[in-house]
Length: 255
Ligand SMILES: O=C(O)CCC(=O)C(=O)O
Image 1 (cartoon, rainbow, N blue to C red):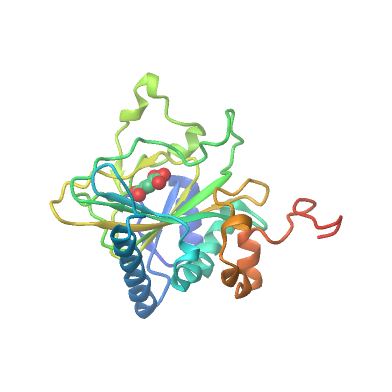
Image 2: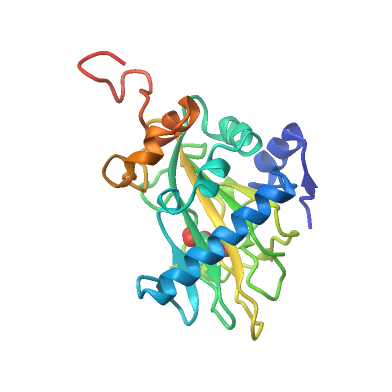
């Protein structure tokens, strides 16, 4: 693997610039991580039990709107290490675009190869408009559906051309022990891997961020539970979009 686990932000930013992704060692305590993983398991099961679970492609599962589903999810959105790296990629007053979990279930197929800034029509500017972070809640392995990527593909600065066969471009799995966080450029070609195991669920949380002038994927103004906003720190409010970005997001002509 070209990129190795690191807790050094300078190294992480250099990996991201060069390869389109970096791999951070778990940036939270063991106790916080355990609580995070337990909370996601509880939400996954209760949504299955009460019939609201979003199940797709066999037994894969998405759990949306995590901020409304547990305080554990709020803490990682504003994680200093991840946000430190994000600021290098997305610049001043970047925001949270959405937060959700993607679970690759046993025998789950791979996802189509894509870059995340699907909303942007070509030609793309020569920098990322969005960037993603994948919190690995289980060990990510080549067998259980670890996210697969095309290293360096952010530099192509476009989506894969399916008509030209680029949907089948060779990929590598990004593996790491539970707790690792992969941060990746919004232009990097990637996909959920095929989970070839019989019983393993590969759980990951995708905290997705955007530049301060890009529309967020999730509408926090309409959908956030009031208590989450009530306890939001200034950083969290900014991430949610409650602060202005230069002259955007003003209130009555004033920030
Ligand atoms: O779950 C993964 O490994 C990647 C998910 C992904 O690429 C997506 O949701 O767009």
